[in-house]
Image 1 (cartoon, rainbow, N blue to C red):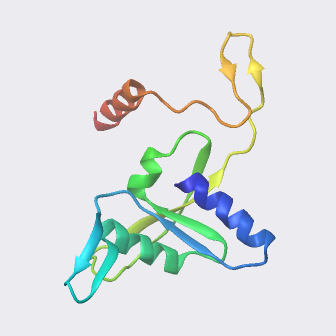
Image 2 (spheres, rainbow, N blue to C red):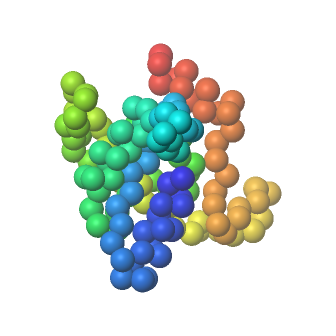
Length: 139
């Protein structure tokens, strides 16, 4: 989702359009709401509301994400930590981040260690590596 938003921001700039993007991670309800007289397809939930707040606080053609999303990003993106913002419906300020692409890797192809490095991304950490790092952080 973050990579898509970064690409959309570039596309908006190319067409001289303005866009703001907010990306969050969490549970949401997606489906039909209403009565037989008036039915709408909608998305509801705390993650959806926070995403809208991030979008409203994003700079023109900018992308903001929450902490949960930042933790799940692959290594091809780094995040700049910004000043937490106060949002409606939350007691405490919310930490926010500006995701930015890292750029191309220094090496492409097979390096001397035999590791394959693709030009479009670095391999994300495996689930085992993420769990191991999480345990180390808790200790």
